[in-house]
Length: 67
Image (cartoon, rainbow, N blue to C red; front, top):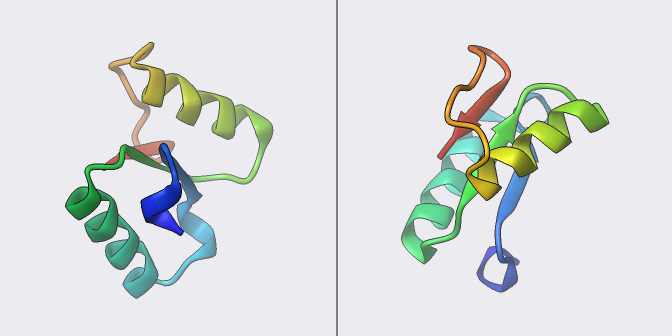
């Protein structure tokens, strides 16, 4: 699934630590950009997309984690 994606946006609070690290490693191995967002809201998703587009270099602690 990750190999077919252009980028990955994942809500960090929904997955186990193991899944988080497996996804992060898979993205790194495949060269896919990924962002983990803290909350399920559309605002977090929009900020995640902005990070992927490179529109924001500053991330609030606890809000986003750019792989």
